[in-house]
Image (cartoon, rainbow over all chains, first blue to last red):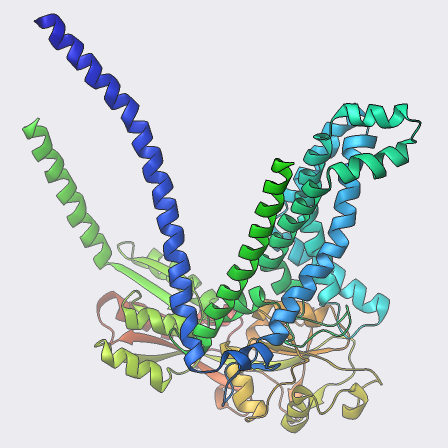
Amino acid sequence: MPKSAYGKMAASGARWSEKAPRGIVTAAALSGIWLMGFIILFLIKEGMPILSEVSILDIASGNRWYPVSSPPRYGMLPLFAGSCAVTLLSCVIAIPFGTAVALFISDVCPERAREFCKVSLEILGFLPSVVLGFLGMVVLAPWMQAKFELLSGLNMLNASFLLGVMILPTIATLSEDSLRAVSQSLRDASYALGATRFETMFKVVLPCASRGIVSAAILGMMRSVGETMVVLMASGGAALIPRFITDPVRPLTSTIAAEMGETPVGSPHYHALFFMGCLLMLFTCLLNMLVMKIESARRAK
Amino acid sequence: MRKFLAALVAVMSLCLFAGKSLAASEISINGSTTILPFAQSTAEAFMKMNPDVRMSVSGSGSGNGAKALIDGTTDIAAMSREMKASEIDDAGKKGVKPFQVTVAVDCIVPIVHPSNPVGDLSVEQLKKIYAGEITNWSEVGGPDKRIAVVGRDTSSGTFEVWAEKVMEGAEVTPGALVAASSGAVVQTVAGNPLAIGYDSLGYVDAKLVKGLSINGVAGSPETARKGSIATSRFLYMYTNGEPSGNVKKYLDFLTGPDGQKYVAREGFVTLK
């Protein structure tokens, strides 16, 4: 009798210790999903009321952002164009450079220097964006202004360059991972066929890793779209559709950051800023889905 | 076990009460980032004099300050403008009666790069520059170079003063650069020989930028207090109803000679 009681206790003890971690992990995961659901709901709830003030057409096609004049105008086209332009230019800067760095680390760099390269790349990634923004503002902008005799050094090129520096580690590290994943036997086979190192790198290794590099580039792009501090400090902040890369721009993120603090809560301006948040979320969501699609295609292959 | 639980409940409720009594001597200030520097230094000085009072100061903008007062999440709202009628309406709906205390004077000064020979502009010229009608420094007595117009965000208190006193309803050109903070305006103008900006007198560092006079009146404490310079404004703190207790003690300290010393030290203009 005592024996069986002991056995029962041990069994229930074991069950408890097995259930508890499972419960905790499930609860943590569920609360994360729950929280995310609430954030999205909140964004939509706060952003949609603007549509009762102005039509979606006026928002999408209006090129004047004057939210506090009377009558207010909520044309988001220059802001959206600013976000797109800055992001694209930063990618044009960072993707070739990041891929080259990745290729260097995976295929060119001697084994001993590899760790050093990777660590220094990671340190670049640690740089807080506010530090980069500050550099852009006090170093890059005056230099650019004097050197190229521009109206202002705070412009799209300045912000894109800084964003490019910021997303470079993301693109380079992820691309490097997928380049390294290309099997050594492929490289050996290429050399055995008499291909040069250049040919092996650009005609064998790079095409094999291309999906990985594309998803790395899109992840970098997502970071670039959402980045706020750098563009707030270095992009100039003029709500104009940029015609040249040295024009000042005002991306969506910096508009939200700069104006939210001073906007009366519940006003149309406030809802317009949340609407921009929805737009940004939609944009990054689409990019994310694209990455997922590429990843699953890669796995299927 | 039951005894232990009882003890636990007792200790916890004690903590709760202790927390409550602490909260009673806590003052929170929220609002304008313009006011933040001297609100912080006076709060520190006040806490030193009254060790039983704890103060927390945060700067989230005049609009957010007003909202916090209306929602009851702050004792004092710091504002660089008068409360709007819509905000007072909202307050009334929640049973909050905003009470205004003038705490300092702020003066907004146009600034240019130190190398710029221009020293004085009229309100009319400033308005035309910001509206994008004057685009070259030679039109206002400077070198034959383009003007880089630097402004503030349309929802900042500084912009509001500029819009009201200089722009008079005209719109700022969409090509104007927009700096996100008072400090950023000075940084931007200091780094660009073609730039013109505007900023609170307290932020104008003569080592970095040159302040311009308006219609021959230079920005200074005297001209600001008298209102003879076109671009001066008063800074306010709002409480719910007439201030009492420690909040009143703090506001008396801030508006008194000792508190005003801190106001002056942060670059603002004192009340007297």
